[in-house]
View 1: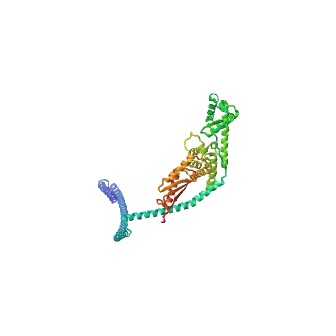
View 2 (view 1 turned 45 degrees about the vertical axis):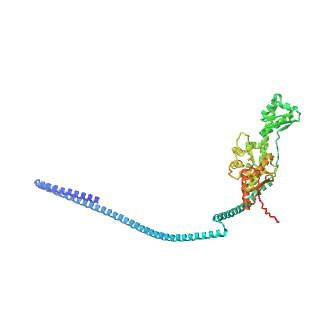
View 3 (view 1 turned 90 degrees about the horizontal axis):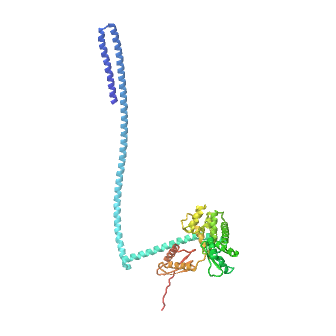
Length: 521
């Protein structure tokens, strides 16, 4: 509408201009009457024609502007009508949606009301049944108390005790059944694998105990030559070998003392050569010790290479081979550690083959599992961790390193090799005759085993038999029932595993004996 008003104003201005022109021409015409007639008439006519043209153009422009304004007004009106129709359509749709939602709400309220009434009736019925059940229970309880002669508390205690006994019996039966089934499946295969590995391995088991004593065959005067003037020979020998030489009153004997078995072996061989040669002085002592040390290093490397070859493994790093050869001069409970390592490597290879594992990696872990025992005391830590750090520096795989480090549970195993190394190590160590044990340690282990069994309630006597391989426990029959006896055996076995250290396995046997005695008069 504003554009239409502007167009009308513009047309009115054009008409006003045209009228002004016309009046001007009239005025000029009047003036022309006073001038020359012909010239004035021509001028007036021309002015009239011009005025008519201007007036016609102004009318045409005004008509066009009015038409344009009318079209714009019609378009705006049509747009507003379309917009109004769209709004009316949307409003109708929204109103229909609201009506449908209201219908659903009404239906939902009606359904909820019906459910509420049904729940109320159901609650009333349940309450009535509950009251009836309470009365029935009270009548039943009174009747049971009258028949049994027991009070409510006494009956409850007896009932709970009966339930507890039944539950314990069922639990023991179920656990025993599960254990028996697991053992029949798992232990059978494990025993087969271990037995096959032991039967197939037929390597020789040597027992070498390096002596620390030197027999003197040249008479007692040889002791004075070993000591030397003012003890210079013995001091030079001790400085060159790193061991202590003890010459006591024992006839024909010299003792060598040192923690390092390799140094002790070098000292023993050097002393024997010096005694056989007869020339004992500081210069000769140094020459002999250097010569024996060089030969010993070559021997250590050869022993390490022989061990790798016996285990059926490819060549290893020279540093590992050299440390491995030093295990030949170490013993664990009188068992040669290098021979023990080769034995464990063979057992590992056989078990890994049965289980479908990497045989080479298993053998490497078995052969190197005790290499930490050859490292001197300057490196702190358990032999498993020290050995794992050593072989890791020289390129052994993570599986082998973890198998060595975890075979005594010093670290958590990340694969089966650590568990298998522990099993093979126990097999080799627990072989009859492989290790010796002094009487004090043996008796202490037996005593701890019997004392641990006696700490359980209901145990009357406990005896460790078969060199500590079996523990027989006698229980009091009035305190421990048949089902409790099975539970006692399991708990005792678990406690022995957690608190005691022992080679191999220990069988736990719980014996419950019932004696019924009557006297005939």
